[in-house]
Amino acid sequence: MNAFRPYWMLVKREVWEHKSFWIVPIVVACIAVLVNLYAAGSLIVAVHQGVLSISNLNITSESDARTGLHTVMLMLFGFFNIVMLFTVWFYLMDSLYADRKDRSVLFWKSMPISDTSTVLSKLFTGMVTAPALMLVMVVITEIVVGIIFIIAAATVGINLLHVAFYPGTIILTWGVMAFALIQQSLWLLPYWGWFLLCSAWAKKVVLAWVALIPLGAMLIELVVFRTHYLSEAIIGHIGRGVKVVGGFVINGQHAELTEMHGGIFGPAGDQVYSFGLVAHMFALPEMWIGVGIGSIFILGAIWLRRNRSEI
Figure (cartoon, helix red, strand yellow):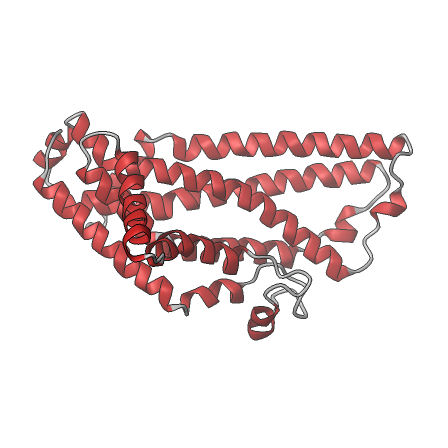
């Protein structure tokens, strides 16, 4: 336990100093709750005014109910996830640069804490702590939103608990979300490592280093060699992750993956996102090549942290 105590203290320091990790999810949660309050209120008004009939709200099968519940939960999760990724992006770009800019790096170098511990704690904060805090807020928000719609449905004569409440689906969906966040952190490791490397190197405008070097390399390759391997590797890596993992299994899309890994709620096709779809990513060589490249960038960031002090 004592061996991990320095890391624990460093991570606590990062979360305390960068309040956006917990303030941003709370703000997003408040927005989501307000939007769903408005939607629930609109539903009640529409039914009472005769604009919408209760018969139009009937769900034809349990499979439809499970898939609908699962899809709505994932949509809310996706909204939180996009905001969280941008938060982590800017945090990692600024993390090592800010320490050098305000010269607090000199204070931390005087402490019995290695540069490796410092860099890894920042990486851990972005890869693990931020997603974990986000997932907690997603669970709380989905519970609150569920209660709102149960009450709204009851006021118009629908027992939503009987129609669409499946505890197994809810718990398994949260499990898939947690598993997907682990996979996502590893899939994006080359980008997180690159952000840390630029943050440890740049003397000003870290974003310019982060963006212009890859863009310049892709442009040179295109002009000189008339190829686009770099753009396929840098930009396509994100796209393939979104396509394979984030794609919904609806109307036959990614049907081969559904048949290969089976469903977590019943027959293949009932789910739009499963443990199998996420686990499939761990079998892709591209993922582990990216992890290796990201590790090299992180080692470079540690070396720069050790050999470069204040700006």
